[in-house]
Image (cartoon, rainbow, N blue to C red; front, side, top):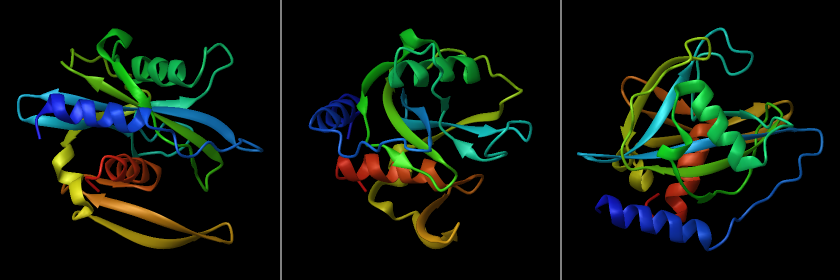
Length: 190
């Protein structure tokens, strides 16, 4: 599938309805940007590897994002601000396609994924206090779920499904893997 078709499919699927909105009772509300980047070889997801210096999720693979700041105008603003602060991705480089349903994590967050289309990735300015590495993985790698695996984990007395994708050089798991899975299921590729 070409990039323009995939972009339209994602946008139309997201506009058809945001499935889950979770109240944040006792949980921290956060937002991430799910950057889909158009490259000469097709569409990719852009990921960050967090440093060992950050407060939470040290060394994990994630999408750019963070906790909503009181000064943010909303969830989309948080995702775009965090992407700029973490990797220098300018807002004007991102076309917001829509929002995925909220995801509650066992670590105490309610995350709203904001899906963004990046037609041409500009040079990035990585905040090395927060981000150790930025990398991309082709969307096709995740399609049809063939590369993923699920484990049941007991966290704080509750059983949770935890998804993993092993790219060979990185293991993408937890909330990030769940977001990928949710998006691809929505567009019937997962």
